[in-house]
Image (cartoon, rainbow over all chains, first blue to last red; front, side, top):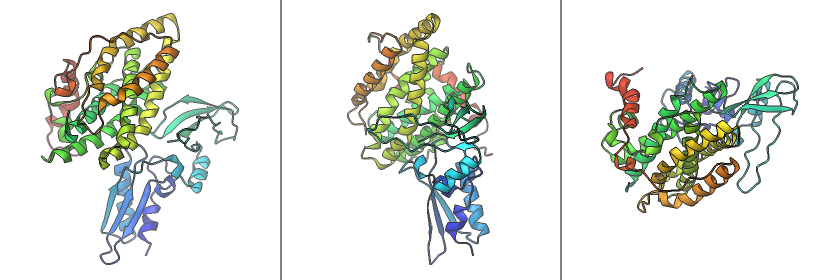
Length: 158
Length: 241
């Protein structure tokens, strides 16, 4: 039987379908009661208004059911708040492969903000510019590469 | 405002009414990127509103959930500040409203993140990050329009002048609240001072300070906004989809 942890971790993000919720860092905990077999999954949203949360909850329950874990509860927590620093290395690599520039490390308080170059996920050029601070989903901004002229999504550091 | 219920309700109503107003720009913004930006900010505000109103409903303990609070109250029961219910006006007015609101919400949520109420602290810590982005966006446009052409400067200054009186209500002292709004004024003044200066705009003199929103006494604009926002829910009570 696939473990509850493996089943929940395999769920992909409905808006960025190349990355799992585990790699995105929104899967916070998977606990299984050893006597009752009841599974409790804890997730946190990327943005407060993220419209994908209902789909994610449904997908987690479905993945658990397929793996044989029928008694499951999905809890949503808001603290500590999600940070793009929680995206795993494999998640970042998958974002790049899908043409989405991953976020830079989140600047810590007290440090002078420095605008880091966002590399084009298509050609790797650092010669890029922001077209819009907001993009197709709450977590993305729209950028363009000045070298290859391709527009691309950039996951905003949060 | 006094207890945690009134406080959560007031903050939730600010966010909800802001979301509804900003959503009015969808398909009507001056450029596509801005259309997406305003819809995104509206979504963030709606997210904060849902958390705050859900919590308010729990604190009240009368069985009202976020939907009951959002859709089944009349204007006199809403506790949002008048600033957020004002009509969108032209793009400069919308940006003045957004900028002033974000300059208040950022220190508010930051203070909330450190307050004793665990739920409010979690909401504050989450919303603070999004609020910083809204403030950046509003400030960018205030500077771009203020320090732009003669016409954009004129209209941005007119917008700031028109909206400014409504900012005072946000900081009415309430020592019993989880965060006393009066304590947020210095941070707001600092942000507003530096951004308006860079935008070559003049900070208006403070005088007339309309208020009443926190007590449920609103401008005539709110009832129209609520009518549009609530009509579907009220026409089909309990409908699910």
